[in-house]
Length: 399
Image (cartoon, rainbow, N blue to C red; front, top):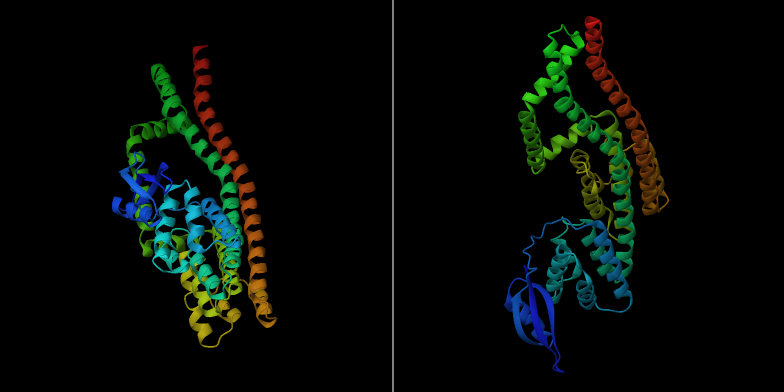
């Protein structure tokens, strides 16, 4: 899809230009002629971009689109007209291209949910289902509003985790940079200085200089090895079996496993709550909600839930058989089922585990900072001792 600069004229004879994304000039011409304009010329804009659908849409952009879209629907705009209006104001090309394709499907007679289903992997697999529920219930605006609230909470949880881990990550990166400078630039000079005196160096100094020389001489190999590991990691992440192996390994890590389980329970329960409130049956809701779980290992453990429910098991009993839902969450869901308030109770479970995730992240950050600082202090003290100890010995020899 490319960006075309179209020179148009209306019934009053006024000439103006407009940018339009289309697969071909003929498609752009047909579009404007159907709107009643006289097309004077069409040429590719210098900003023309061939953008592949598949690029991730930013959460903030997607939320902004939905907020404006639902406002227009509440104002009485029909779906296709609301889409047209929103598309004209969107600046991000990836989102604009996606919405243009959705608009074309809607103009051909497809429903809004059907048009969004083929893009579910780009933004959220829950969104088309929420649209479908709104279309079936006749209240599309309320269904989109509920999705916006749900999506904001999910996005806020992700942002809190990222922001909490930003400082420790930067601290570790700068620590490695500092060590690299010391090993690559500082220690080789001291090594040349000691060599001139041909003095017997302490064991600690000989070890550090040997290690420094080894790193300097094999720097390119280390760099190539790091790049190779990064490439292998991303290649593995493109294979489903590879993702499963990586996610299974994460669950074996002491502190990370608790965080992953709590966050997965939160995502699953919040998504299931939204779908049930939107009027989707429990069996279908569970099948869709498991796709919101980020860990492949835990996602596979949820595969058997629809079959158990179909055989007459309650939701709480089915979740208990997965082996990773804690007793507290099972009890809360059981109360929701018996009191006919399952969606509300699922939302409470999600809120509870969101708070646990925040608490775990805060604890982890508070532990990482002093540990990194202490480790850096020990390493630098070791380096200073190994560098200056021979200097003191040389001073004694000179005297």
